[in-house]
Image 1 (cartoon, rainbow, N blue to C red):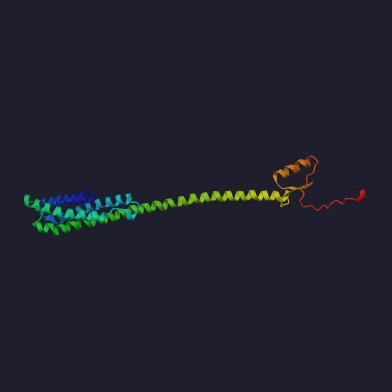
Image 2: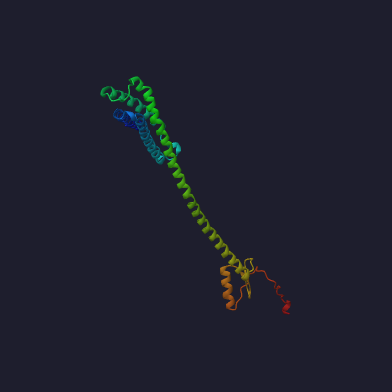
Length: 237
């Protein structure tokens, strides 16, 4: 069964039962007819509000976004039309057969003016409730998203802080290495010892340390030095 047809039959049943109970109550307490009519009217409106509100809440929870929701306007308009026409026809039939005081309205009136009033009595409260239900659910969703956003931002900040700490730590290590190089090296690719200049790499430093400890010397040919070239005597002099 279609959703609009189910709601139309349901609201028509509510309307017919309410009119029957109202006719019996007015017959029993004729002096309270006005109050009983207002109570009956409020009951029909309350049922439409509750049913429409449930539809709005359900639709807002299942829809991905506001544009992908169901067309509840047309659904409730069709339901209200079914309820108006069906409730008018059934109420006229019950009043004619049983003699319950459901009004002295003709069938034409029940299917036109009476049906129009029932349509408004069902459609307007239902759509109002649909709007309120959707609004409440979406507002709660926005609040939940606004609450989760600072947590995510804090997590990102913590991650950024860890990255900044790693960068600072690497910078400190590079600074310590540069300090060591300025103390033990020339900064030009050579390693300085008390025996001379050696290539400033791991192998060169190890070779320099080994030869220095063993008394030997290994100079680099193109190492910077201020030592003058040895003068070779001529003819053995």
